[in-house]
Image 1: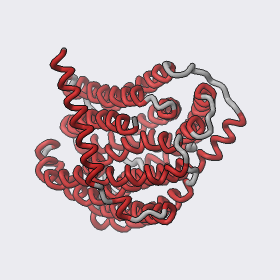
Image 2: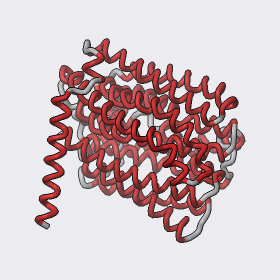
Image 3: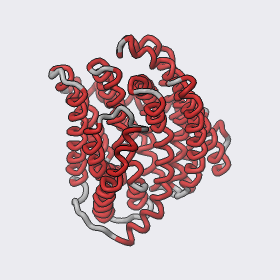
Image 4: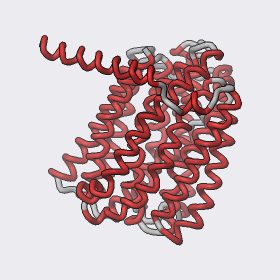
Length: 439
């Protein structure tokens, strides 16, 4: 069941990667580099604010249903009520900070986009709550359907308004807003298939969820800053055009994360439902398999990126190649982090991941401040890779000390397991071919 869920989740990611990649190409081809840089800010700001505001309740929802055995209906009703309240509070609290933000970390973002983007925050918090409940109920079929529809809808919207409609930046922003709202509605409809929709605040459940969730919140918040703060520092020190070049580099580099992310999506609910004595064994096996596949993806990207980027995005984006190459080694080490952090979270030991991420964040920010003025987007990429590598190495050392396993058991693949995975994949492929022939 675990391998099947990972397989289907990763298959969804492959389709999503294709749609997201084509979306990036369309934005790069249809918009100027300056407008493309503004779109990076547009598509980053609401998610970053929502990540600040959710207080780790998405992870808590999974933990409450899986480990604590709370009713899914009760957890969902409480999560939706909290998401709505927190989202509206964000809109109220952030409005006075509009001018300072637009003059610093959001420099270049048109003022008229501020309010629509901030109003997306309540919707995104609701979406995060519903998606976490699909994972908590282990309905990865519905979860993956929602993710696939999101990528395809965003691609279709941009094709219609930018390619056929010859629209510009405003049209692209409208597509992003409309598709995001549509996805929230779809998420609510999908979770309704599993459990009734309610708005029911529960004080005791909220207290228990926040006790767990605040640790996950700090962990994910620091992680989000590690992944995205460099975009805003680039906007502060440089200009939207340079943000666009870096945005292409990070979008391509993070393709290598799709497999570790797929594994993590399935792994956390799995670890939350098994006896703690099995958690380390499962984590080690998953980690070594994940590192192998991520390494293959990174090697392939290192080999073709120098030709692929200018050919697909246009010669003007050749400036994205160097930061992409610099980012890839760090992306690989973060693949290890993405697996191991689920182990600590499933055992309510998020403080370990928080410590590791905080050290990496301090290092990342400090290096960005020094290196961006010196080397531009290449400096930002160096800072990120150093931060990612430190995070992966530190968390691995904590896991080895906690589990008493050797590093070989965690990082090096076993031949018997690889053969087993290949046999399983072959059986699935042959089964699909057989069904096609029957049809």
